[in-house]
Length: 294
Image (cartoon, rainbow, N blue to C red):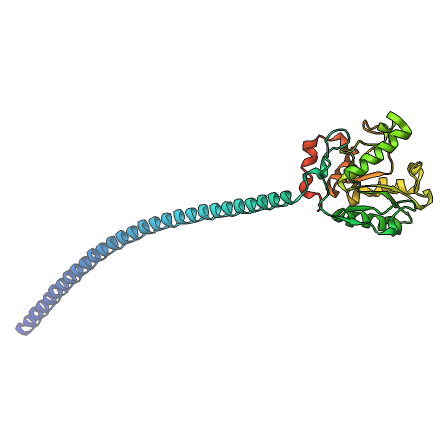
């Protein structure tokens, strides 16, 4: 009985010790867990603070980057605009240089409007090959750059079965004076209907030709009834030539043979719009000068 009680006592003591030990261990672990939770919360708070700081820094850097990109874009745009302005200035300089080399008289309205004085001579003229001259025509000259366009037109007409010949081209002031004097002797004041006074003739520019066909033997009358005239009406503008005095003009009688080089751009626009060179205001005509030989 005594032994049983002792055993029971020992068991109770052991159980109590175990319970106490377990409780102490639990408290120890709980305190450790609480400490760990506290440390974790502190670490989490610190981490969140760091994240917030990094986010703020990133936002700032992003804003600075966006500002730099915006500034760079603005500078690139300014650089492009400056480059464009420089190109425009270069173009204008090229235009001024080009205009400075062009004769301002080339597109003037001379027939009873502007006067071309006796000292005027074209920049450069060349002899027209005899094969393109009318039978009765004397040697003729024309501005060198105009000849290239005129020769193309004559050859194209030939390829189309149309033969064109040059009766008259460049005439200087003195020659025009003599010619007008001859006409006055024969026709009196009636010469003013078909012949310009010296200084008012388009022929003095070296850009104008009177045309006929080999069958006309150097004459001009009746040219409007030839296939050659019909061909010129349809095609001359493509080479820069226009009819100066069409039917109904207010300067001279109808001259189907008289064709003046005004540049392909102006000739094309006149043909397209059904207008005559002398219908335009001189200021509108002058805009085409820079493209005269293009």
